[in-house]
Amino acid sequence: MSRSGTAYLWGVFAFLYLPMVVLLAYSFNESPYGSSWDRLGWEWYRRLADDPLLIEATLNSLMVALLSASLATIIGTAGAVGLCLYAFRGQAFFHGLLMVTLMAPEIVMGVSLLVLFLALKIPLGFGSLLLAHITFCLPFVAVTVFSRLKDFDSRLIESARDLGASEAQAIGHVVLPLALPAIGAGWLLSFTLSLDDVVVSFFVTGPDFEVLPLRIYSMVRMGIKPEVNALATLLFGLSMALVILSQRLLGRKL
Amino acid sequence: MPPPLVEFSAVSKGYDGKNVLPGLDLEVHEGEFLTLLGPSGCGKSTALRLLAGFESPDGGEIRLEGAVINPLPPEQRPINTVFQSYALFPHMTVEENISFGLRMKRLPSSEIRQRVSEALEMVRLPELARRKPGQLSGGQQQRIALARALVNRPRVLLLDESLSALDFGLRKAMQTELKVLQRFVGLTFIFVTHDQEEALSMSDRVAVMRDGVIQQIGPPRDIYETPANAFVARFVGESNLLEGVITRRLDDGRADIAIENRIFPLSAPLCLSPGERVVVLLRPQDLQMEIVGPKQPGEGRLTGVIKDRTYKGMTLDTLIRLDSGTVLRASEFFDGDDAALTPGQRVAVGWTPNSPSVLPADAPF
Image 1: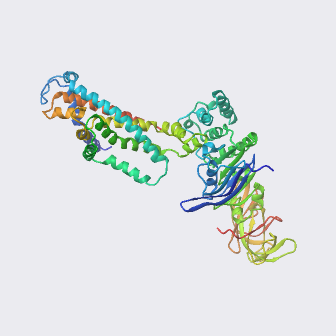
Image 2: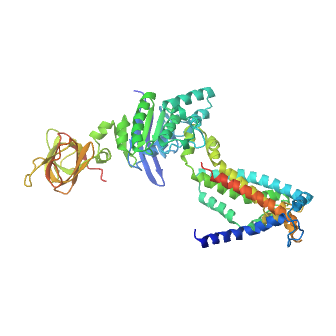
Image 3: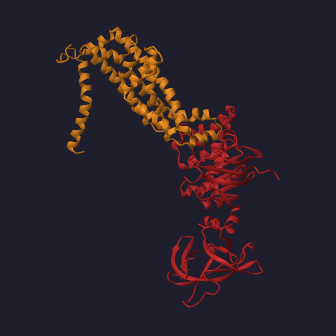
């Protein structure tokens, strides 16, 4: 690559990652004021562990992420299998609908879910939050699994049937094992999405059920506290790890 | 006589308004190696998929040992298929692939182990039991697919273009192996191919199909030597087809036929009467050439000029442009010192007695 090309590439990556690097650096800065550099230390990470509200919000977030990722994975996988294996009227239409929910602005989703919950008189809190998270995770799982299924030889299913497997057995013994990496990747992706969602959660959760991203949001409203740097660094690390894992799963060959 | 093992009666199937099989009648007998031969789109694979149960017919009945199997799903038919793409399960080992059908039947594990190892012996690949399909060559995958089907001891084995994915040498070897295996296990094989040579060399009977209709069914030799029509003649083996008209019937079963502005007395089916258009089939190896002078008429033969001579190892192929412009292909065994004919020479073309077949011209291309 030419020298200017290389410089350009570095420029783009600097633009993308500089904020994260700054955040990471400041999270290890013991000075209480963001502007000056004191010395390296774990101070802010220690303080995180002493904040009971923060701990509670973290546990809430992890619970919602685990549940919503798992439920969205089950529903989304079933949907993808149905969409892929069976020919029915409106198949393309349903696939299109899936893509629309994938692209829909989060704020629209948040507002519309809130309106729906109010109309159905569903109390805002854990239940409504979980439903909302399942809703926006679902298309990600369905699309990931669908694109995996679409690629494999439909003769494999016929061949399983031919050898005496019922439809359910063919799905259980052949389709699902082959789609497993995509199912895993879908789950990880959902978990990450759920864990750091702010916009939808802001609309649909109640006052007595706080999740981590909203807790962070309320912390920074009074000015950026150094603990937030530490917390954000942790979250970034976790998300990064999950995304890398999901990409590795997807990259695995059949 | 026992009822046929497999019977199609008036089976029809269409896709998107296109009638792939207008009404197929076919009987397959126990222990037979039957090949459905035809160009792509002739309905041969559809017939196979209907029998396997992957598609259901629009009309007609498919019977197995006399019982109608139309409503049975594929898993309830004692029929197994070897696919063109083999369709081995990539996430299972060879052993797990072969045992799949037996596991679905919930046979005791000792019997499964026994039968899987027998099947691996049969295809002579016992050392590959723990490999994954991705680690096997095309020929090995082909044999594992065969073992996976045969281990279930089906009443009928279906092979859908099963050799097409192999390279030439391997395909030849598998043709022989498949035929030997079929004799050995005594199973009924229904093989689908577009390769006429494959069909002729392996089958007990060949059914030549076109547009969903069987044009001719019979032993390979009948198909090759007495094709029912011009389509079969052209599809099976190399052929020269000349258009002609019957001018007069003779008393001995022959008829005078006008070909290339000459009259030839040839034996012709009695159903053909004077005035009818016919196609005369001349196989390249039945043609004989002789050098003639420019003014010689070449009595009782066709005349033309040699266009090209091609050495093909076993045979020497000659292209002759007849006076009318039609090009014939002649093929002779190469015997080394037979280099007298060269391009540009004028020749008379004759044929071995009784070799031309006269066919009705009802199958235009």
